[in-house]
Image 1 (tube, protein in one colour):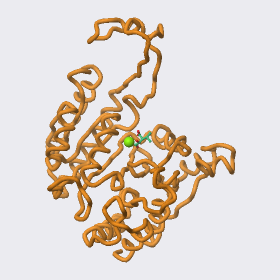
Image 2 (cartoon, rainbow, N blue to C red; image 1 turned 135 degrees about the vertical axis):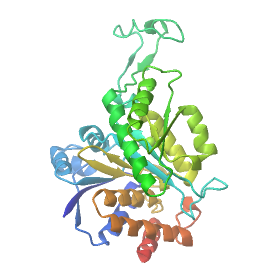
Image 3 (cartoon, rainbow, N blue to C red; image 1 turned 30 degrees about the vertical axis):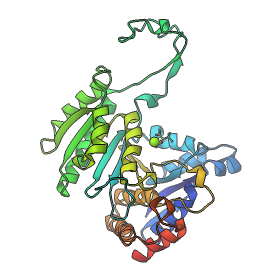
Image 4 (tube, rainbow, N blue to C red; image 1 turned 45 degrees about the vertical axis):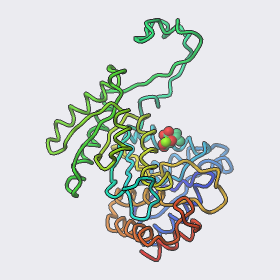
Length: 353
Ligand code: IPM
Ligand code: MG
């Protein structure tokens, strides 16, 4: 029996989350959901948005299934990332017939962004330029000391050898696995190593070195702005794309836009001992309470979670039911050009199971 912590999140996220959990429960697996007191539930029960009790439930579970947060459940999200060291944020973009893609020819769009999930600007170290600690650092472009740039602020972007290496290895393994399933087996790395040779150069060099251990995987590397252009102009040329954290955050939303929007964007965050699964979109406060949020991103994240937990057949069944729903163009939510509610969409997926 596998145990999954379910954290629905805030705003419209629970409206996608609960019917998705019901779909997964209808598969009749040896899997049970438990609900740690996080966010509002934590505040009400324990006076904290992320009490010890919630952390202990996560620690005792096999995985976490997360909706999306407007901040109230953020402490839990931070624990799932940094506390559980889930360094590889895997964000697939795969066009399914029926998606409302802005591309004229979206067929064959099937790529996966692997986003480093813990470092880069997400070390979240910021300060004031006048601060004496960094005043002696020199800007290579302005040729001034940092403290002489004027009144302002700075942020640290940190890449470690270990952080780059472990996510590069995860991406290479994924490219190899995809190759065995008929994909090109190509890894594309994107960095700004022309401006930041020291930091982004490290990410690229470590990735290139790790890729040498995978001679069956084709390796290429582009400056990230060039890669952004390729992502839009020739998305079908990409297979597995490896990016440092912030570029990965930005370009994964862009990739979702190519397929048909954020409502379709799934993700799984993997560490060496734990993984959690969440849609890549936010909590969609603008449509909260209307019952029209597209649950596809949540369902696809659920598919990734089932695969991770060893329920491959069930994962394939759920994915096939989703595919059939889109292929028939039935009961689609407004973001995909339909007029169905979230529940009507899920009911339709259920009939295809
Ligand atoms: C994401 C989100 C998060 C991020 C936010 C909510 C902190 O945008 O998962 O992509 O920036 O990582
Ligand atoms: Mg994001």
